[in-house]
Image (cartoon, rainbow, N blue to C red):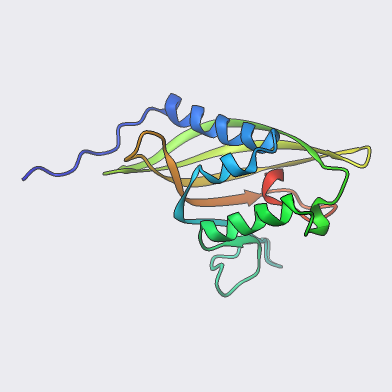
Length: 169
């Protein structure tokens, strides 16, 4: 019996997937954006503690955003779409995401761990804010298109002027 092949997706293919995910957010195509995630995907944005260290456990420490699976992401999109969130009241914000320094950290059969830097601009109420950070993903690459199984977003801004949401990072 032969061992499963290590994932062979290229950095260019990974980058194209990341660019598509960012475009879906910028175009507010949230229902299509959700399809980038596997059902059991975790989405986590840890907070910085008082000592300037990232929190390490989303189940026992504070997080800026935490959804243990795709159902949480789907609920968030429902709230955005139905105006059941003070963070997304009118006027709708405009965003523009930039991705750079895409790097493969590890390859396993059917999975790839990646990291990349990002910068997003967010416009609302005649003001533009910028957010920046690094994201760490695990991608399931067994299908026709990659699926996110784990997403950790490290927001590096020192100060956030308002509530941060999934489409801002």
